[in-house]
Length: 117
Image (tube, rainbow, N blue to C red):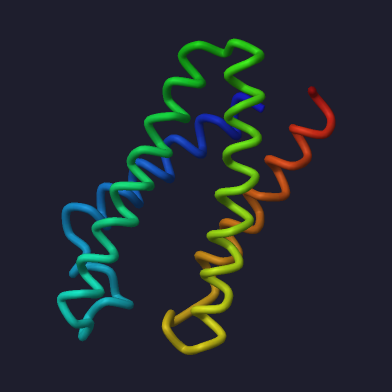
């Protein structure tokens, strides 16, 4: 589970930083209107916040904090995975990588939530 928490922290902080600070570098945003870049920055802020929560969870490793982390990220990864998949099916994203990544993290989070708590 520690690896899941660390991986979540790293990936969310990296994705969040990219989307918040340089959303125009995202290949899916190449010809996007400025409103899309603003939405990207908002998602980046959310991802940075999520990554910060993962770092704080890792630093404490308190069972109650881990429980809340797992509950929060179950919801986060399931919903973002669904949204990313729907966006991919609609042609908004060039590939399904984001949807697959969040789906894998959702499965791992659900696994640890159901087997360790």
